[in-house]
Amino acid sequence: MPFFESVDAGRRLTIALRALRSAQGDAGSGEHVQEHISAAIDALTELEQSAESRSDHLAFLWEHSPQICWIADGEERVVSISKSWHELTGRPDEEALGSGWQNFIHPEDADHYLAAARKARRTGGNYDVRFRGLRKDGRHRWLRTRGFTRQDETGRTVYTYGFTEDVEDQVNAEARLRRLVERSRLASLATNDLIYDLDVPSGTITWNDAIREYCGEPAQASLAWWGRAIHPDDRAHITESLDAFLASTCGDRWQAEYRLRRLDGAFSHVYERGYLVRGEDGVAARMIGAITDLTPRIEAEARVKQLQSELIHVSRLSAMGAMAATLAHELNQPLAAANNWIGVGRLLVQRAPEIADEAGEALEEARSSILRAGEIIRRIRSMLWRGNENREIHDLRDIVDESLRIALIGTSSSGIECRRELESAPVRVDRIQIEQVILNLVRNGIDAMADQPRRELLIAVVPHGTSAEVRVSDTGTGIDPDFEEKLFTPFETSKKAGLGVGLSISRTIVEAHGGKIRAIPNEGGGTTFAFTLPLAR
Image (cartoon, rainbow, N blue to C red; front, side, top):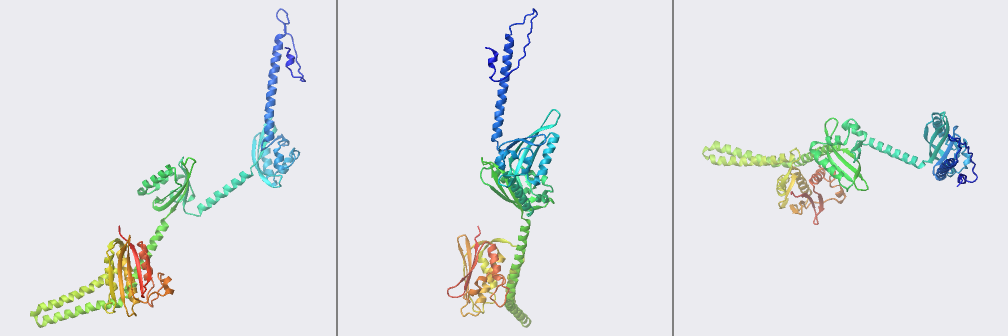
């Protein structure tokens, strides 16, 4: 087949042939020349077809890319631009050609954009810049342009190829993220808590600036540092608890209280809570948490407890002060009797030494009277003892008996009938404090019956379930309905004299022991005060 048939119609080829003669002077048949020319044409055709295919691909990409694709010459004049320009701006392509595209850059961003483009064109580099561009709806939106320069053999930029895309959503998301980070930073500055972010797989942990008080520099506050800073007595069970939590595939919150060493070497009581983010497979990925120093709270609680103890002691002093006249009378009786018996004994010995036995009996009576006075003093001293709280197991029946010995001093001549219904009930309490509660309730009942013709006092101890109840019931005037809500309010009293702290202190003591106290009006008149205490296990 003639090789010319392999050439497409309408194409023009210029072929120069020069005959090569053999050593004998023959020009040859020329068949091998035809073969070479045919192969060359085939190769040329294949190259052209490949180039056309690539051109088609690029044209398709140019046509359908969501980005604005453009080409500019060496003077940054746009010579070609994709249809995405029209879709973004609503303007025809002609308005972008040449330098027209610059009219769509926000005036405040134009200098920044052009400076980046000119520098890249001058140095033969590339550029990546964000700016605000005018959309077809009249609003400016954030855009991003990346330009790639092309140089000729002399190094002069002849073309810039670029892509411009809408990044408004990305810019807004980044702004929201910055605001969120800033809020988190300000929140961490507003608290003394140690706030951390733990990457579980790598063990990398990031702290807020509050960590400086504990280890000096945040960079030194690694997960290993945290483990070493835990008090030795707490370290094992705390680290084991956290490791087990992170290794599990369920649960999203971990919390613990322990002691953590500060930079000065002292240990603070802290409370930590961490919130876990897990991957789709349930494996721990990230843990964000905070560590709160409990030391100020513990110190404040200790101070409140101290003040409460002092107030309780003041209440006991007040109760004893209110009974001062009665106590003086009760002490005066046995002491006066002792003095009389001693005088009788002295006279008997002086007048008749032979009746020493009778004198001895008189002195024994004196000794008994003195012991009775001493017992009264012992009980008062016990009530007024100011010491640390000491909770031990006691029989509530014995505590009530001991309290009544003091509370009923001086009532023998006042016509008060006291009945006791006491059952055994073991409780773990501070004995002196519970005696104080009973003393307050009994003395209140006695005072309430001062002007009543019927004066009956019932004291009962009744165990039921997991607690025991003490009831003090009187036949007094009852509680004024207007005063009922203020009954347990500090410094509120219906009496003419008194501090108004007795019932308030009683409630504080009972509730501190895990019980409740209440006042119940009696049907026949008077009031029953009842309080509960947990039975000892």
